[in-house]
Length: 461
Ligand code: ADP
Ligand code: ASP
Ligand code: MG
Image (cartoon, rainbow, N blue to C red; front, top):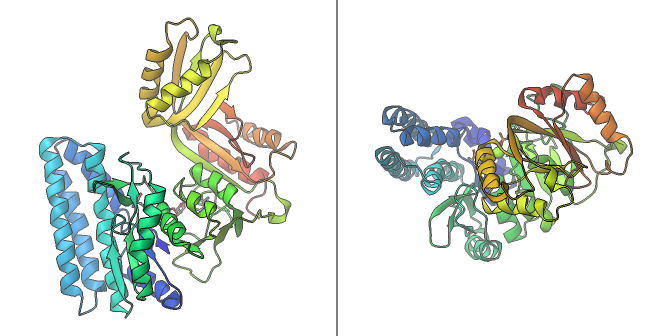
């Protein structure tokens, strides 16, 4: 069971999470994954930026807010026996956190490695608090960091990749003894470590990934993701008022949705679950009796609807390589992707003009400048490419549903519905699988495009 930030946001939510766990344990062997409390990770990110700029005054102010709130929650949730131990643990983490911020502030240097270390405090603080909350209601629990639980990653700080073989082996070795003694491991989500012990993070939203990794390693029967909405929905409920909960969805479809920024789940989180065919339930921690969404290996039919959901990924830009010399020149596309790959630019979408004179790639906004520079160095002045252009502030709209590709006319309906709202489509790509059709519009048009599609396909009903 993984609990998201909102589900642990204050003492009352912590106790609520503990009661949910109690309902299923010790009847079942439960492993718990804790996210950082509320929006601690966002706050730590802000502190990192302030410290880097040398604005220690504001960094300290925000820091003390975090320290205070954790201290307060810890005091309320811990049972009599554990208060002292928990408070001591929190204070120890608080002062390590403080030293880290001071260090960054004095050096005015923030590497991706030190940022990961700083961000790790969110989950490092929340897991012991949740473990103590469980102890207070009579359950036996042990807080562990992701690394202590056995998750090892490479050293791609900020978006580290788990070393699957080692991790699965270690997780079994470390967690089975707790489970066999009827103890509940409470593992920090999001954070792990390299083999030599440097703290890493799995990327924003990474607690979901921690949960599915642990579950796959332990061959769990199910993964339950407790969050603040009733399940995976047909669209982001903040954009579409009548978005509906999807009762069933296949791994393939869910993967498309989460990859394309439903923001509901970490993009890679479904991989371990899908590989081991472990069903994932997404449920609302405030309304646990609701069924939520079941993600499983079954292709679901959803009343024969071809389109199931529509999602949006913000903060992307388009980089276009063009040149008349590209026509018929073999290897230009390969060179483009090789260059982007070796510069660590993740390409989210590709489209090539039928004339072969342009190749456009969608990448994260933050990667646009790096992508353009790298492509200029690698491709200009060789006779093929004469222009490399960029457009920032775009978003990808992904329309997801199995069987969409095999049904004629779906794409036409999508584009007509969007055009009717006077939204200009900047780029269309062949979906990366048979589950989606995606296209790019400007950032400001994104919500309107989502609503247009939601309405056209009657997803709210
Ligand atoms: P958690 O803290 O539990 O990990 P997140 O904030 O990461 O939760 O994700 C849940 C939020 O994702 C919801 O509150 C909702 O606003 C947003 N969201 C975006 N798209 C969707 C969608 N298609 N279905 C459900 N929620 C979505
Ligand atoms: N706390 C991390 C984040 O906010 C990880 C997570 O909550 O999944 O991104
Ligand atoms: Mg999340």
